[in-house]
Length: 237
Ligand code: DC
Image (cartoon, rainbow, N blue to C red; front, side, top):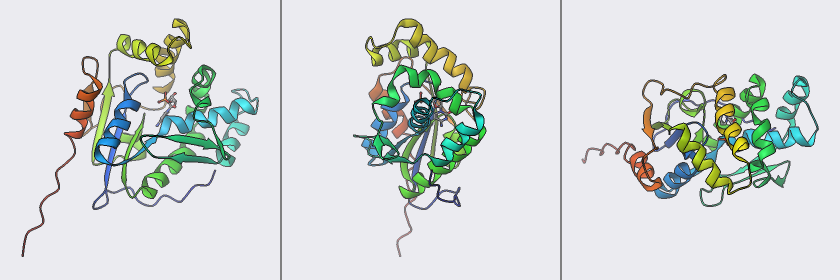
């Protein structure tokens, strides 16, 4: 993977990074895309990057104990992200895998990649490079954006929802493509695995908690857009 050296962690004048973390099924993706569209910002789904590497892992026929080969995959795979919130896409070595990354087998295996420290380091560098390439005007969703990837984001949100609501949403999203057990596995088991590498159950200092259990998508988008700081007017001469 081509990684641009990461130099800048502080906020940039004119920059607006909206960082949204949360567990699966909290409504993160629809919310993040809606916020980006409303505010005219780019959009980055960092989970899609872990998923695309998982596609590479499955295609290579690797097993979880082949740590060296998994880490080499992260170093070598070329991910290309399209950061348009209306048509987000991701390519692996030049091939669009935007549909394949949503397949249940990818959801089942993604934690193998997401719990590898080297993979996280490589992808984190790549995410930071993408934020810089978007001139720091981007909505970024994931599990560790507010804490690790971009802790100086102008807006930092932890989006949560009751587990029952999250399972219901995932079921609706998958529209019969997965059994109830598979959906339960995707939501509950994956949260447990993910929680071993990122803390996203409670908000870090300065991170706003937004509970979407009883809110519509439009209400969640309104809530997050209201957190955007208003620029201080420059004094007139
Ligand atoms: O949001 P998602 O379900 O598409 O995420 C896929 C996996 O990637 C999930 O198991 C958590 C992991 N992930 C992560 O560890 N850190 C991120 N910033 C984004 C996703």
